[in-house]
Length: 374
Ligand SMILES: [Zn+2]
Picture 1 (cartoon, rainbow, N blue to C red):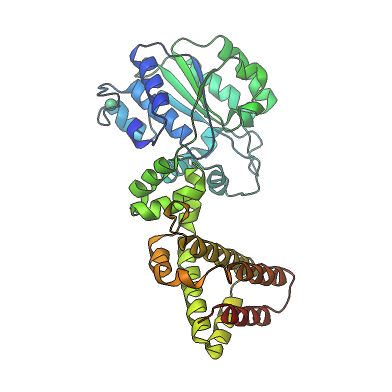
Picture 2 (cartoon, helix red, strand yellow):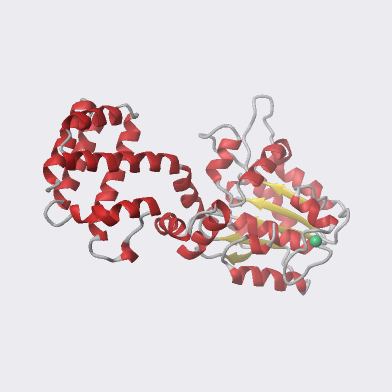
C-alpha cells in the first residue's frame, strides 16, 4: 500500500512521513475519523513506508524485499490484530486463526468495510471481539527481536472491540513498550476505547473526504466517467463504502431505470394493455425490491422536476438517466410533480401493507397515465 493509493487526507500522510523520515515515531498511534475514508489503508502505507529500504519522494519504493513482503501481507516484522469470533472447537480465538480470511479481506477491500469483514467471518450477525487470548499473542510477537527491520509494527484494527481483559493485559506494554516496537491502532469509535488505553495513544485524526475525492476514487477504481462518479459520490457524504454499495446495486439501478422509462412511455401512449403487463412484471419483484423501485421512481420524479429548473448542481443523474431527462423532464412540472409523488408514496404504502400488488401497481400506472398530460 502506497500513500498515493489513498485518496485525500494529505496532511495525515505528511505528518506520518515526517515522523518516519525523522525517526521520531510515537510508539502507540491511533488513527481515527469517519468510516469509509481508508484509515486501515493509511496504517498499512505507514508501516510499508517505515520498513521500505529505498523510500523515494515520500513513498515506499514498492520494489525492495521489504515492500514486496508488505504487498503480499508477509512482512516478518508486521503483525495484525483484529476482531474475531469464537469457533465451535475454538473458545480462545486469536487473529492468527483467521489470517487467511484477513488477507483475503484486505485484498478485496483496500478501504476497510466492517460489514464485509463479518461476511468474511461467515457470520453477518456476529459481534467479533479481540479476546484476551489475543493479548498473550501480541505480547509474545512484540517481545521477540525483530527479524529484518529496525521496527516491529503491530496494526490493530478496532481497539474498541478489545474486551476488558485483553485491554488490561496490553496496558503494560503500551505503557512501557518493548524497544523498537510500534502500535498503530485504527478506530471507528474512539469513544468506546477503554480510557486507560486511549489516554496513552498519540491521536491522529483523519478527515471526511470531499465529494470530489470520492469521485476520483470511483473513477480510478471502477473506470466510471466523471459525471457518473459524481452522481454516485454526491449522496455518499464522503464515505467510499456508501458509494461502493450504490455501485454494487448498479445492475438493479439499470433495471429500475428501464422500468421507469417504459412506465412513462406507456403512460404517455395510454397503452393500458402494456401497462397491465408492466404492473405484472414489477409485481414479480420481491416485496423489498418493489419498495426500492418505488423509492427510485420518487427520486426520478424529483430529479426530473429539478432538471427543468436548469440547476445542474442539484442534479445527481447518471449519464443514461440524464440522456432520457433531457427530453422527458418537461413532462414533470408544477402541475403534476406533487401529485405524482403522492401516488408513488401511496402505492409504496399499500404494497408494504400487503395489498394485492398487481392491482395496486396497475392502478398506480393508470394514475400516472392521467397525470402525464399530452
Ligand atoms: Zn521499498
